[in-house]
Length: 140
Image (cartoon, rainbow, N blue to C red):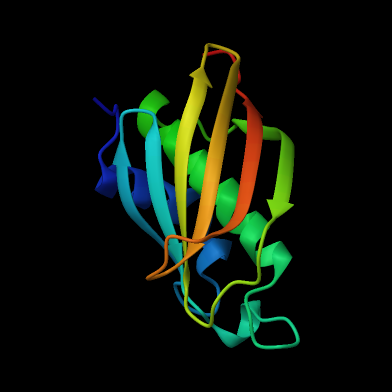
């Protein structure tokens, strides 16, 4: 069972990271659960690269944000947890839709959290990007 509900996690993210919604909400937390989170990124002009698809940096932000949401939902409001590493494999060009990031935490310890993020184009099961990340968790 998650420590924070989806609404509590979303409210915390909105309060602590209002800059993620500058220009309107594009990142949408869709679900949290035991060691998991799902987040959606809308297809929007500000995230596009030449060719009209969502850019690599936008996918990186989505993966990092989904990983952070999964950690928060399962640990509680830890604003100072920080990314220590991210690794990305871009596997195919995303479609002309928004993206879905499915995050699964592989380890959630007292000092480190390690997660796996799988990004697909909305409406497709084809993997667009695979990311792994590690977060440092501050002492309580």
